[in-house]
Length: 194
Image (cartoon, rainbow, N blue to C red; front, side, top):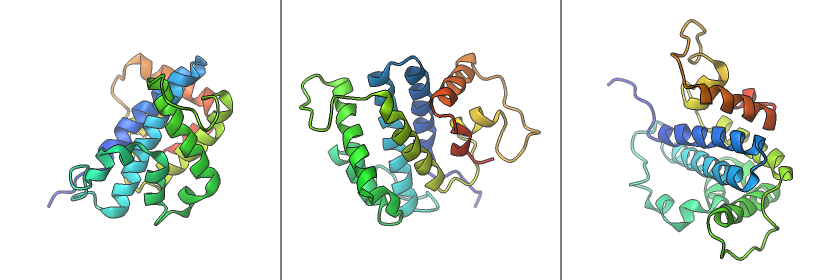
């Protein structure tokens, strides 16, 4: 049987795109909009990590077989982290859960004006550091073998594990997004496999 990418890899690619959007918007100091995409990235990375725990090869566990991740709990970062905490205790540390609880609420606030606020007054630049730490940890805990996902290719400028395979012409916005993201999260290179 030919090797194939894990099914949970689809979440990584979409999360990477949300992370790049976060960088552009945070660089422009549009924090509510930036963190909307940031929380979307964390949610998708958490789903990829959960599915990789449940099905390391990525051939059987999907959002169709794990229906709960499509429901309300599948958008709750704290609950997703608790599922991942079975294998990775980092995600069930109280400070991490507190940040994820706030990020879930602020994700809702960015979309719906009627959400009752319990955990602060919304996103600020102070949230960038814990966001970056959690997102980096997630992307590194996901068992990516060949990092030819959007962020990996964009940050490296070439395909994984070979500088001899340059990336075909990517849209200019991708370069701008990586530049903006690296201004907001300076250690962005630590997110990808080299």
